[in-house]
Image (tube, rainbow, N blue to C red; front, side):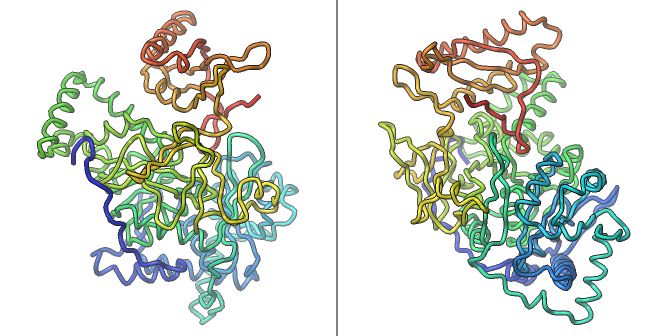
Length: 571
């Protein structure tokens, strides 16, 4: 594969469209002979690695579903879940998808007051939670959850009034299902009805409940697979309460008959890569950036920086001649990730082109894409053999894209229409009307352009972040932040406008959290001079309207959302 991809877009894959997860799991069970494997999930329990087959997983969903259905939680009921990624989390999720109830994933990083807001706003009847810290928090703030009928602890061994044990619930469900109780397994979730309510974290404002139908969920899975390649083994790293981690990562793996290793914490991430030996992973740029830094830190620590750079040049040169020795030359790097990693699907935030080029050079393709919770979340993705690190790839089949009110460069707000677009915001018709037209067009709030010739979508920035200078020039701060973050002296940065006394935006400034290793031991002036010099180096390559005039240094990292996006301040 060449460093610059000269291949044309190729036909979308043929995928069997499935109406619900029951059919998906049954198909995967039937395919086991074809895949020569039947392990659906692999996870750590203490020091032990537990394997769960597709048949065992399907049985577990039937048992849990039978238990909560017999308790009366059926059509119209809301079942919520919070906690770290785990097999139990997946079981609750898919059990609810196969029922007539609605699933409400809850962000595990939220403070207790915001957890209560999500539970109360969604009208959750049952609240599953994982982790003793939640047990303590919930019981200490029980008055914040007046409408929850039952709390179910994944960790508890025994029931305690309205606080139930997941273990006991599973035992009850097995007794019911094995005894012939069939109300749950005979349910047929309605394709067009509400199935999941996902609360957006956002960088400002109160979280909104994004209503996704079963059609939304299944469409994202089916259309995404038409564009992307599959793998026999994967690792789940992204939080399951996010649509990218739950609706795409997990459900796509089940449909493909993939063995999914579940990573339960950042602390065990690299050990789990080595243990599960994944061929592919879905990640956000933050992880890719950290991997990149770790690789280079290891190279520098060994004192082989010059040699490594020579190896990259040699490898790239041979690749242009059709000779691929990347996995041999960089075997020690690949071994850090289990030895089989060949594909990273990256989304959730913009990714620096440099990262894509580097990983391609060592033999791992990154296909970055674009998604948004309100689109279930997948809109576009680069393809394994047709990619461009500057773009967010090819728009998924079944979707329409429109660039609203484009400027002279063809840039405008991205509008999306199709079966992945949400039903609306839960209990917020006014907010829904602001972004969703009567004929189904969703306003993403993202600016970009679409190249009809290449069929690729390009993201420029967020609509609300655009800086309009007094001279009429439009500046997308994300573009400049991308350049600045690539500088070794800068870890995190936010670019904003300098305003004159009339409030007009007349220039650019940046607030920088420096790379700790670069400023360690330096006083404030020396640290400032180091960063300022780096920014001036950037300025020297840019037109005047994109130059950063003022630099501010901060001592602490920026405050972030739970999805690790920097929270911007808006005037």
